[in-house]
Image 1 (cartoon, rainbow over the protein chains, first blue to last red):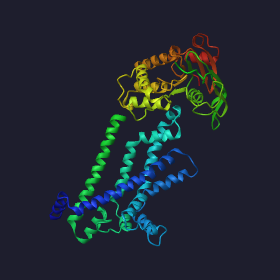
Image 2: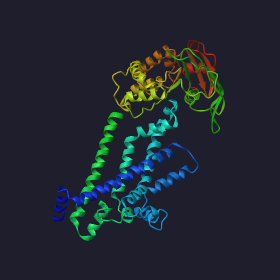
Image 3: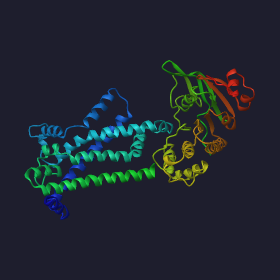
Image 4: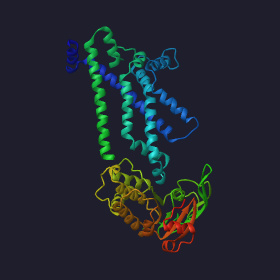
Length: 230
Length: 240
């Protein structure tokens, strides 16, 4: 119990070290979600609405990549960004930018695969009506993305959940440098191994609270959407 | 004032639609010209829905030719369709109408007046902010009619427009169809309901096994059917 009490005290007192870690974690994960959304949503829509040779294979690979092991992604990005790697001259290894790149790679397949499924399901429903209304390809994509927006937000949250909770990729490419690349998950792993349970528990509470708050907001938005849009 | 009709007559000339070896439409020829509503009647599987989709331009025939106002491959700018089970967009009633008006190329500053006009026409004034998917079946059908009318069509296709509606909802949809026809819009409706065909149509086309068996003015079709199939269908015998 003393550890839990100390942890709560750290959170409630607004401990600067703890909240610096929280801020960096949110910055990295939210940036990764934005980057992955910019890539994954159009790609998912494209696969949903077009027919091409090998499409089934693309869908199978996309779905399989949802289960990408974070440590493998971390290792691949490490090899790319290390001094001897092809992108070593960019000097991104052990920076928040490298962590964003790794998390983007990790969650882009999740966003692309889930948005592909969402948009394809809606397309099968809307296809005849949109054809009858003579809506062109760009208009179709815009309509489907807009009308599926509440489901797509849930997709983005799934990506955020994956990014916020993963530890393997960011610890490899970020290095867990105090005050620079230390995130909630890497700090929890480190502090637990050091025996500093109050800080680890405090970060755990904050991480859980963020995940619950984000999902509650998504649920609320979905409910409001259903009420007004059907 | 509507623009001059450029998509009528719609001529289907020896049109066939094959799915594998099965002929859904079999060298069918029919013309939809200006004037009173046309009812396509016939048993299940006779090709009514496929003919409507061909005439709307949603599917291409396997063989044969379809022309709209004497031209081929005319985009559906002045044609509209009400499907048997219309899909409501995930928007409010007014959101569905605004979308259809935008898709029809109606200028933004004219849309609100058209929304009010269309809602009044289909009896949905006061429903503006209701989620479209939460309307009753009859209300959804009337909203889909309003959406179809948004592009000010020269011809309106209806695929079993009241198939799943109760008598009161059926009457309200039929009232809208009459009002639409009275505005000079050509209505082509597929129906199983001979009573509805009698009430609404000025011309009947009987389909059977993908072919147009008989085309006649409504009164003559029911009083003096010319073919054996038409006689049996009017008498209530099963056409298999």
